[in-house]
Image 1 (cartoon, rainbow, N blue to C red):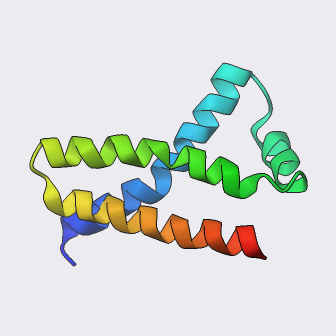
Image 2 (cartoon, one colour; image 1 turned 60 degrees about the vertical axis):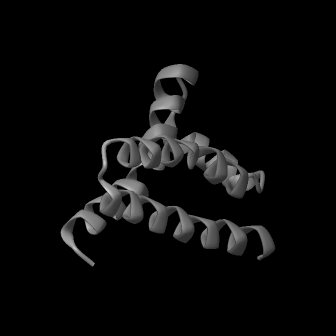
Length: 92
């Protein structure tokens, strides 16, 4: 794994949380930790994580378009990791 893969992987891990945080704080104007707690209590966490991963789709195609295939591979790896987390949360 080269450094571009690691950078893409890190971006792919952090971007969904940042996108969700921006949505909650600026669009909904709610408290972030209260909202996360309410989502966990209502068993909607896998759904919210899945929707937050849409930002990875945008980042992935931006990396492909700018010929940064190694970074795109890292973003894809992070998205696959999130998929396993969502499956685990869904069936546990």
